[in-house]
Length: 497
Image (cartoon, rainbow, N blue to C red; front, side, top):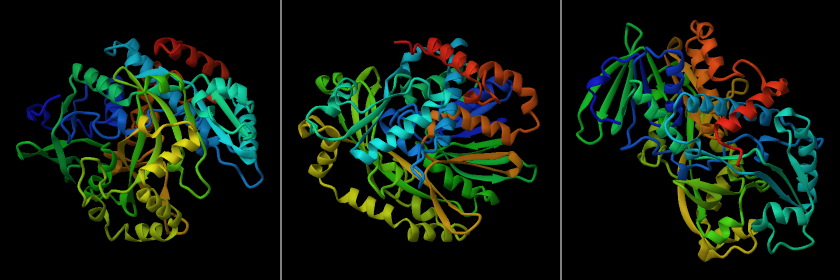
C-alpha cells in the first residue's frame, strides 16, 4: 500500500474505501476487465481498519444458519425462510469466488480467513421452542439447509453448547438447531489478501488518502478530490467509474455527488460493544457460534450471540452486542458526521424515523445507561455461570443504518440491511447499510457490475461463471449444483476439518 499518488492520474475506476467491498470489486474487475486501471483510496493508515476489521464485526460468515431475525414468524405461527434462503445462496456465491481466487494463487492458506465453526440457534420457553420447531421444519424442507439438526433434549444441548447449558435450571424449556456447515470469517485478513493480490496485478492502493469531494464533469467523468491526511496536500483525479464503498462514510460522499438517487436517504449511526474473553477454559468449552432471540420489541441489532472467533491465530469468545450511540459514521470519523448529513431532501425521512422508531430510541437509551453489572447479568442469562472477572468490554465498529423514504407513504423508514445506490447513468455506485454486509460482498459487487455495466455483462458472463459456477442460477432450485458447489468449496477452502 502506498501514499504516493503519482500512479493515480485518471484511472478507469476509482474505489473509495479500503474495506472488503472495494477489495471484492477490485478482484471481480481483475476477472472481467483485467486491462482496466484501478485506484483505491483509503483514509486510514491501513486497509481493513473499519467495519472489515475482525474486532469490529461478528465474523459470522452469515449464511442464515443461525440468525433468527432472518426467519420471521407470521401471525399464524408459520415461519418465512425466504430471506434466509437468499442470504445462504449469497454466502455460497462468496465461497465460490474465494475458492476461485485460492485456486488462482491467492497468497496464503484459506485458514487465514475462514475456518469451520458450527452455527447454533438457541431459545428458551415454550413459545421459543414452538417457533424453533416450526422454523426447523420450514428450513429443512429447503436444499440450502440440508443437515440442519433440531433438539430440545438438554442432554444433547449440553454436548452442543456446554457453556450455555451449565448452571441452567433443570426445568427450563430449551431448544436449539445446529448446522455443522457454519464458518467463522476474518474479513480483515481476507481484505488484506484481496488487496495484496490486486496490487500484484497493477491495482494502486493508497492509504492515508481521504476523498473529500466528488463532482460530475461535463464529459461524464467524475472528478475526485483527495487529501493526504498526513501532509494535507490535495489533488484531483478523474475517472470513468466511481464506487463508494466507504462504510459509514459512503452517505456523505454520495450526497456530495448530488445524484438524484440519493435524495431522501439518511443514516442512523449505531456503535456496538462486545464482552470478550480469551480464557482457554471458556474457549475450549464453547466451540460454536450461538444466536438467541431479541427481546420483545427490541430491534434486530440487539440479537444476543456468543461467538467463537479465530483472529490472528488466537481463539476467543465474544458476547453481545451491546449497542451505543455516537454521531460518528466511522470509528475514526467526526462528531459532526450525523448533523452534517442532514439535508433539506432527507430531513423529512430523518424526522419521520425519529417519530416512528421510539422503541429503538428507548432501547439505545437503556443500553447507554447500563452499568457493567447490568451488562454482566445479560451475559449470565446466556451463560449462567459466567464470572465477571473473565470478561472485558471491547468496542466494535460503527454501523450506519439506512434511512430511506417509503415510496408509498412518503415517510422515512429505518432499514436494517444494505442498499445499493446507482446514479450518473451507471457511472457511480455506493453501498449503504450493514448486516449481512461482508458475508454477501461478492453478490453485492456482482450487482454493481450488472447495474453499472449492463452492456458488458453478456461478454463477461463466461468469465464470471468460470469463477462462480452458480452465477445466474438459484442454488436452492438446483440440488445437484448445490451439492457440487459445497463439496468443491469445502475442499478448496479447507473446511473439512
